[in-house]
Length: 199
Ligand SMILES: [Zn+2]
Image 1: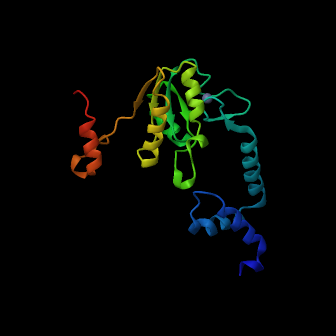
Image 2: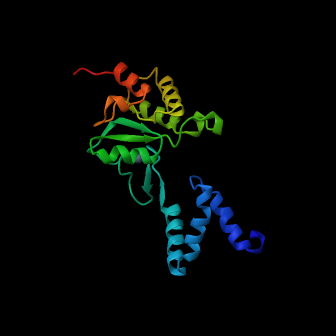
Image 3: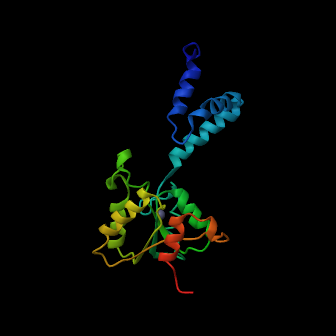
């Protein structure tokens, strides 16, 4: 049927290429765009194009920055530039930043090692992280997600930095604040016990 509405077919095919957009939502998103008035849609497209032009990754930490401005983190002299928190993506950086309790800088890996999806260490920013360590970083906090891929990526980075004079740490694992032991899964309880801290 869609061959009779080729423009809609094209729109749906373009939306199909957007990762994270569930296929069941494609029609809804297409309808949303088609229902937008033309001015609103033009503005939306202009913002999309302008962001592509003006938002780029910092060459040191790989978080997003405005083209015309310094990196918010790397240029901040109040932050401890020798303490680097390694995260998978920008989203995790935001989560840590929102706590307001971290005073170091970041290193965004831009993904995790995932052989099934053909993502190897060379596709990430690990070489750049090693260069930062060589340039004087003193401590690295590995804050990848606790998934098999996240843990494998951590292990790879730890191997790469083994010979370097840098302190490596990872996030504490265990029971979330405000929760009861009885509702925790076995692995969480096991990690909380095995990685216990002094009272
Ligand atoms: Zn930066």
